[in-house]
Length: 73
Image (cartoon, rainbow, N blue to C red):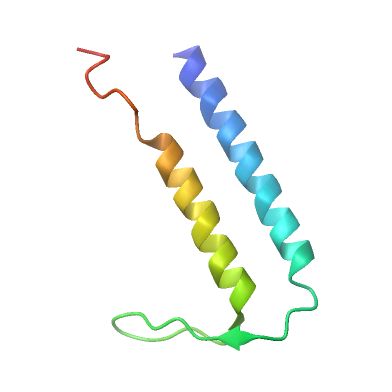
């Protein structure tokens, strides 16, 4: 139980650090794009922000999936 909590804190810290670096890095970005959802679309966001946040969210969600789902059984 403690190991999972430490793992979650470590993953959250790393991804938060990536997000802060991303926000600092996109300050001079001029390429902008919109993300089209099924119902609506977003405002124009820097392309590097869209790519960076998708990388960070994939990293966060991918690290929460257990590698061996049968370990607990």
